[in-house]
Length: 275
Ligand SMILES: [Cu+2]
Image (cartoon, rainbow, N blue to C red; front, top):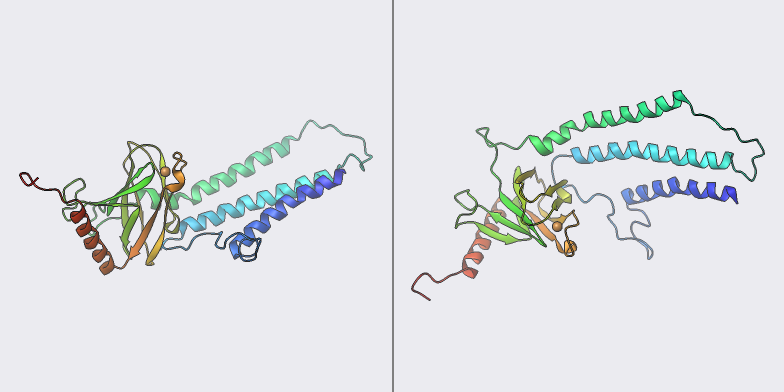
């Protein structure tokens, strides 16, 4: 019976690697066939110019993958080699190895230090180097997205460029941005922690009550993709789904005017004396 367990543990790295490879290449069971999952289990299409997040993901996946396979094989080998039913050698107790302890402390420390230094540029691009206008000032946000149980409220500042003035445009779960432009979005929460996630733009940021934060990305492809909430924020968390549409400049202007016109019609309030 003993060696059955060693084989079983060997299946863990084999199955693990197989699932990743199948997901990356859209092979069965990740696509096609009656017993398969839906296709496209790997990354959603990349709609932004920067590949830095994907590079970082693949680097960390490779490092952790090597460790995962290595420890899986080591576990298998020890179970196989020292199986109690077939191993007649007397048991040896050891008090550990100082050299081994030093090695397996230093190797992970060096690996973590390497990741910490390697990712600094990605962090700076995503969090610190905010896009600027021609005169070097920080680029103003295109719109403000407020997470609220359970929807994304989106507010465009209008012609005056300032939020919370009468010419603002308010929409729900329907974000439009122009293509080929650095887009800055101000994000905040009206109640609890949410996480503003644009999978195709490789943007994910927790939205924290009381904090004003900014995210930016550079869409290069026109099209529609998802906005999701990546933080379990309450019973209706699953409903916090919106869509982001990347438009050409002309289409963006057309959408903006149409949405604004619709808002003005639906929000008509009789002026004083007219009631
Ligand atoms: Cu949420």
